Image (cartoon, rainbow, N blue to C red; front, top):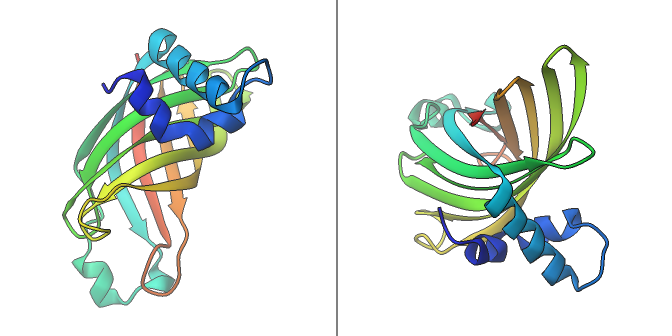
Length: 180
């Protein structure tokens, strides 16, 4: 796992909005949030398993050429605050739609609803840095995307949506998460 300062640099935009309103600059609050997650959070394992390209945005030929079952792996640290909201930092690597390695690291936030028993539904966002072959030959770039999840106990299925236009974006990315 990368050191907390590195992850803090990756996730300032997301962590700053989630940082508690206390003394100090937003930068200090963000760094404190990420450091707390890194030091006290629980380890989490991420397993990417499906990339769904919206059929209305792509030709059949393009969809047939894409990787939709990406092998990959990720690791992170996450904590739940006093309101039951999740805050996490993570790093993940997997094959993109063109079968090339994609790397990302960032911060995530989700709030939860509990429909019954140990089931939980989450909605939030992730702010990250990503590096991929076709974007500046692995030059890192930032992003913010919505995240949703359905979980039972320590296991959840998570998804994020990448918006786009005709022939790009418009992708649902799915991964499993286990909280140790």
